[in-house]
Length: 370
Image (cartoon, rainbow, N blue to C red; front, side, top):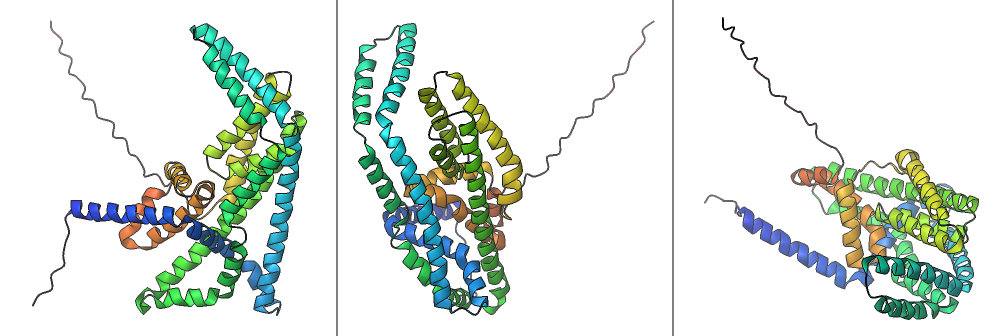
């Protein structure tokens, strides 16, 4: 008997692929409360793994080294959360004044546009009154509750340290399990994939953290020079939003300009804030990102934006932050699996050389008629 390979037609392969992709997305969406903390824990574990190895090399017990590393991490994150919370409480105290000024400016702008376009203004005024009333009911307590609820939904803060501890403790077991899944002929390739995945996540996250600190300091200094209120809070928020590629920068500058419009007497300050933001973005894109955040795995702008939107649709704000590291890991797998190389190339930012062929023009013969 001759073994014949079953070759499926293209439309059947496409159908199976779409069904599998739909099932995967459905599982990721339904089980997000379980999957998101685990993904965060795995990424944090990869990030903290070099620190744990450093303590182990100092002849410290593995469990104590992991606990000490987690304590340092929790202290740093707790200090950062306290900074954000105190700034948010200060902001909430002047929230009613802020909303009143903002609605007055917005109301004047809408009135001018309505008069110019000959629209009925009473509908707009009713909507503005309702919106202002709803915004004024937001007080410091509600803002604090919002921060806590977002934080719990973002990271499942009580579960993640436990997951991180277990993953770091059983890291040798997990790596050995991955090695035993594949035959001896694929061991070299498996080691390369595991090593490069760890390297990509570590370099990317450490670089991203350094970038966020630098951008946050620059944002705060720029806003303080212009005399914008809540400069520290806005600088930190801008640094966090800057982690989200392309979309985060737009949201950040819009927020800065709104605060400048409301808190300053002249609208020119919004223009100055926009100019400062553009200047910081030029520094970030041309100096900070290439030298600090530069990773071995490059993702092009199209898929960077697309994966951020998909991450937001699946997992909300946590998905926006997790999307790029996960896509970078997927690209590492694509680059090391021969059949998936075209997909890895599609995700990358290496442009093919375009050769323009210039058509040769034939010279016309000039006939002298005498």
